[in-house]
Length: 79
Image (cartoon, rainbow, N blue to C red; front, side, top):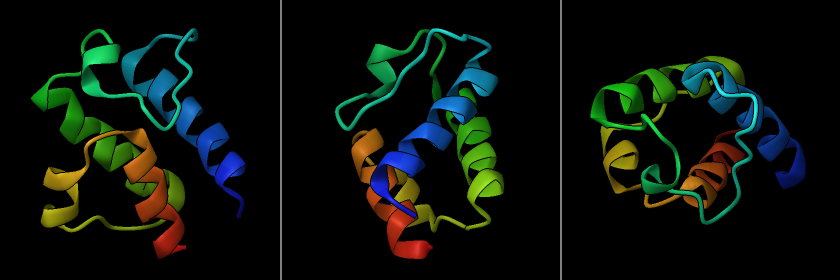
């Protein structure tokens, strides 16, 4: 799977979780960029991403991700 394909699927997950069809994420996207992305929604988002890609993040990975680019890197490593 290419990085571009990962981002296409991540966009769909983010749109579903935050119920906003206008969201488009990129490498630099952080919680500050998306309305409603708080600690509770972060848990929902991680669960949705894990389900979409059939992977599991470690707690260490979840707490150290600084942006969506790092999330994509971890997803690609796990696929």
